[in-house]
Length: 472
Image (tube, rainbow, N blue to C red; front, top):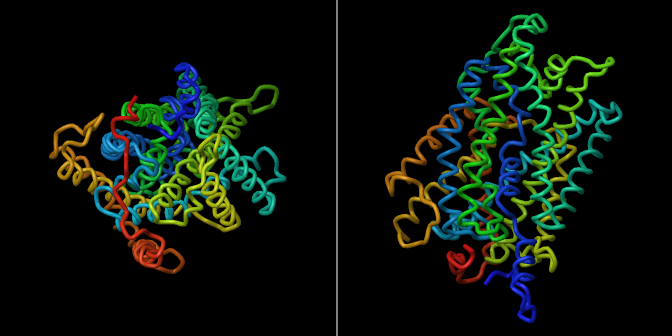
């Protein structure tokens, strides 16, 4: 029986059902949360078209959902429906490959989060200073970042439903200005060609564009860590993954197609935040006011806030699951009596990310992909191993094609990951070769596993996952 069940003295089935539903995430809030864990909207895609040009950029944005997103969504759909456990991908890998690799899976995710989570409050401040120059100074920008961290921590402590509904509303609101761009663009066909000259691609190339697109399309498994807080996860996860793939792809492709026909060249997307300038061109001025530009700026703030908010929900469930397994101190397993939110894990994680706000992190795209991709490969291996070892495991959804289909599903993500590793070998991070730097971080997980062995129980049973009981 679920830990969210009401006490036995409350006999009314209606009351019991209402309370259970009030504490869990349903389909569309889960889709919205996944959308923010992966994308956060059209923002962040500027470099793809600016560097690779419209033709190759749009081709990349159409290709990646087929080669990268759908295989990943299928894998997550099967493992989430088979093992809807708190901790998600960590529990999958631990069950399929053992405690050591389960620990490495969690470590790789946390390591990637260090490079990711400081970015979103910074982006919030970036858009905010376009509305108020006061936030242009470093100290004031850090205050804006702290506002994001603290507010998202409070929302997460308030419970998963609050985060899910917030994500759903933010999705609708930030989509409005891009929907306006798509609607208005046909009336501007060829009218804005002169605005920025005739320059097009700037040398990012097809491979560089693919890597940036991979960064914009990654994070699908983050939603799996909250599986025990999702209503009917066996049915909900496969549907949510497919719906999110479609939504994310459309929010990337449609605005660029629309802008292409206006005649605005790819060089207009020269810098991050260029969507605001493009929106100003398309929307024009009303009484001297660039109204569509303002909508894009506000949407950018909502995007950054929504991404941080959803990822706090995802990452905070890892310490919870690991503490329950004896992999971390038991204090991380503490949850709110009312909302079941892991408040200790939320506050500790938020505090760590807040400490990173003053640092000058760049978008280390290839490093992010390297760490995330390594964890993703463990999940694809787990998919195949569980098909072989536990063929009778109840799966609400299966990757098509039997065992062969499960193997093939991981081929294209593996090839794309290999490209990222080759690319990282030509970059330098803190004076160290990019691939070597990533290798050091990965090796750190091996060291930590050995250093924390005293925390683990002598025998840790496989994850006890209510495969059938939680399906309804």
